[in-house]
Length: 319
Image (tube, rainbow, N blue to C red; front, side, top):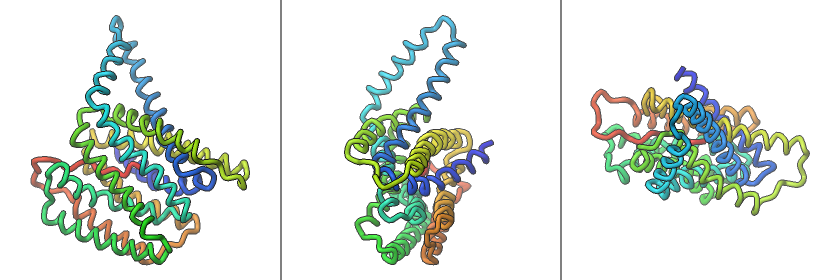
């Protein structure tokens, strides 16, 4: 079952970039990002509510609602400010920046491939935030990943992607790395579904209203295009941010972070594949850079027989 979940998450997150491209034709970047987090929050909230009702029926005579409210208040008092990190650094900013870049250049494969940088940047974040120093092969992987980044930069120049936008593209996986490391360090005691629901909900409260107020629907589009864009946002929210996130955390808990972290390897490949299907140009430099980064990520994440005193944070793209 977990292998099916693994394949499902790979396909969903790899497909999310082409869906963002279609949604960005009609809606602004913050509206697309806000719709994603809102859809995911609603799904996880309904899932948790359903589980709560089932528990209430089983636990007769227990004031389940009162207990649940006390737990929510306690969690907010203890982790309220900490939840802002995964909400805005790990969800809000990346979910708005990705559709902005994809819509600006009408290219999903290149920006989808940038997710290959998440594992390497997570290694760097773990040194600073957790004090976990990499092994020799992990250092080689970080340096090799830098070579892949440089190759991507050359490919970006050929595509007329400005240096500022390239830095913004790199900032997205950097935010994922920092957010995942912070969750590992500060929020590890929270149940994954509850953490996801709170983070998505907080991000939606800010990002979606800002998008609806500051952005407008493109006027020269048909109702068919608008309907398809709305459908893409619904899929991105419910499936890509809700179901896929729940499955990701399920794999982390039952099979471990190394098994779940392998999702990152495949996401970039699916993003490139869908971009090629949609008529985007896939250059040889892009494929070579992708291969170099994949090789370095595999080197960094290859399981070791010796146990480490502290495990690296879960590597997840969150797309």
